[in-house]
Image 1 (tube, rainbow, N blue to C red):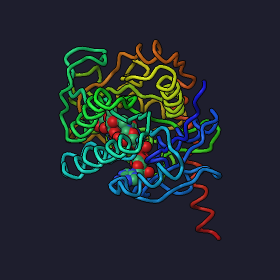
Image 2 (image 1 turned 90 degrees about the vertical axis):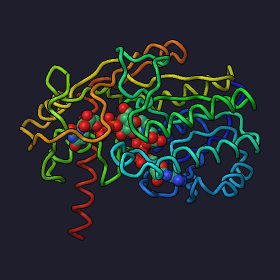
Image 3 (image 1 turned 30 degrees about the horizontal axis):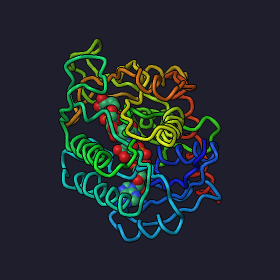
Length: 337
Ligand SMILES: NC(=O)c1ccc[n+]([C@@H]2O[C@H](COP(=O)([O-])OP(=O)(O)OC[C@H]3O[C@@H](n4cnc5c(N)ncnc54)[C@H](O)[C@@H]3O)[C@@H](O)[C@H]2O)c1
Ligand SMILES: O=c1ccn([C@@H]2O[C@H](COP(=O)(O)OP(=O)(O)O[C@H]3O[C@H](CO)[C@H](O)[C@H](O)[C@H]3O)[C@@H](O)[C@H]2O)c(=O)[nH]1
């Protein structure tokens, strides 16, 4: 590989961004993190990696950083991510995920950044008519979160065609787990993700867990999702960057394993790992939730040679649990001292 760009990671203090930072550093890329710490935390950024606190809305600040650090590639994780909140506060999502991305993309073009990798989502597909969902399936988001991300995808594709920005659009399905070496995990205390909430309930950090919707048209009535381990996803980002550096152009891939689990199956896996039942309550459907999202996940393997290394539900649960135990132990130690 002839070019080793300095990579600016927006949202690098967050859950997925912090794992991508580890993967980039492990692969030998110089990295700079930019984050407003709205949900991310300073401690998620490894020692030796500069963390610049700021908001992606501040394009002058971004331009200064791009020029100062001679940034050649951007991985854009910063955004608002809670589907149900997007239904209640759509404009927050259009501002942070669409408008702020527009400013960032414009700044990249203006300052000559060559490569841009974007965190998109399975939520762009809405309620697909055929399964598994391939990348060319119709995009009909059913919540503002998905719409806000789809608009950014389109801006990137158009900018790539007009200005030659090499663009990687990575549509993540449901991301779970934590770094198997224990260096990172999901830090957001109010996180809403199923596996995170379930392991917190297992440890008594939460009093229990609700199953949102038990009357979906699925084998056990609960929603189906295609869960992907965060470290496999982080590796996919490094491969995507290498692909753009080597080949240029565009890349648009689903990031998933291509198989789904119901909410109840996930909770059973957590119970198996902890060896006891969870305090589970059935609850009404949550706004904006599609019944099933399972990917056709061949393109990422074919184009990038991606080989998942952590693709068992058990490992996702175990690594999430190990991280949550560590966070709980640290909090306990702080209370005692
Ligand atoms: N977690 C998932 O299952 C999932 C699935 C699909 C797509 N995604 C996408 O992946 C990306 C990362 O998600 P995550 O789960 O790591 O969430 P996260 O909340 O842990 O990380 C987002 C990070 O962006 C920062 N941020 C938010 N708005 C910002 C702004 N205006 N300026 C600067 N920093 C800002 C936050 O402080 C945080 O560190 C998001 O774009 C999300 O939409 C996540
Ligand atoms: O306490 C909980 C939490 C979740 N669920 C259910 O578990 C499934 C997964 O929910 P998550 O909140 O873990 O994830 P989402 O599918 O809502 O959304 C996630 O994956 C999407 C892509 O599939 C988006 O990108 C989004 O950012 C990301 O949070 C859903 O059916 C949800 O209703 C529960 O039953 N109880």
